[in-house]
Image (cartoon, rainbow over all chains, first blue to last red; front, side, top):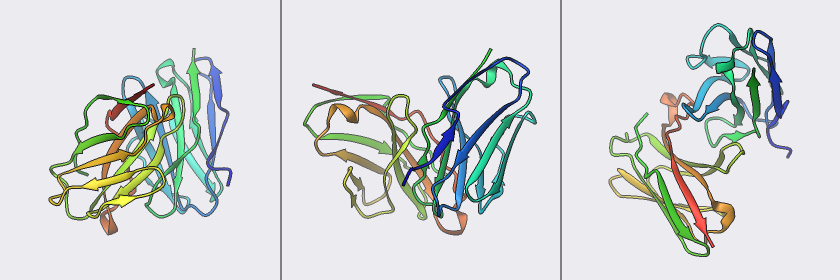
Length: 112
Length: 113
């Protein structure tokens, strides 16, 4: 099993640009989670899906952030427009039911 | 979900057992104890979870006290590759399980040669 796949691994962009992060969960998993990690705030849950349906987006910072899961094998997290304070490592994780979550390698985002 | 308390850092000699404590005094009857770790520059990794019985897998053992107010994660023979931040998380099960994990600051374990 390839595990959770995220792309790109690194993204450098300028303030105001649109950023799209991608995630492919482990096949057969029915939950998908997006997290953000910074030194100041640690690891924060942004949003999670169950069977492709968003369940809790209370962690999404503001309207500039949006997430979609069009099918069971793909999800995106979009930031438009991006700001320097969005610089962080973004992790995607998936799980079967609500048991142990498996995390991807993360996308390191730098907004200049 | 119940709040957990962990020491911010610990050291362990290579080859010795690492015992990482976690306090969760407000844990409810339907809440599981989960342990994850995060090695530098990698995503968190699931280690083990339990409800009230002790659990063991290929990575570690989880010892939960009888009153469930605290637990200990044991790495029986720590190696340098076990150097990481270890997170103890409690989460509800069943219909009240939202699927959310709330990560605290964790314990930074430094395994020394």
